[in-house]
Image 1 (tube, rainbow, N blue to C red):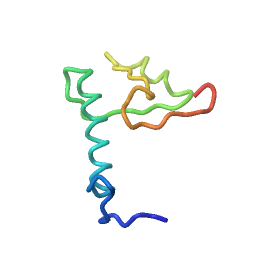
Image 2 (cartoon, rainbow, N blue to C red; image 1 turned 90 degrees about the vertical axis):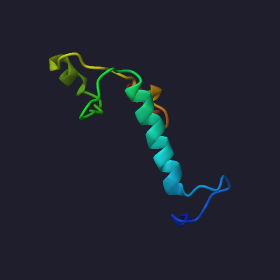
Image 3 (cartoon, one colour; image 1 turned 60 degrees about the horizontal axis):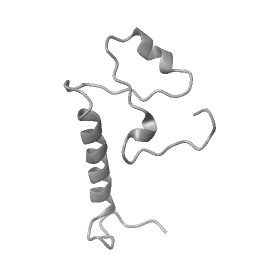
Length: 77
């Protein structure tokens, strides 16, 4: 059963508040790895990693290292 977005969890937070906190944690993690304030971010899937070879000074962060990002259980991803 889906929770009402205004319904509070055991911690007293709404699901929206919890999601915003997770987004902020992921953002803080990524910003801590660069001195620049990027205007965009790219999440590249299988076969698209070569795009960064054409970029000036790309910052590569393994997807699984980012807090709250799901990871693939499929081998090779």
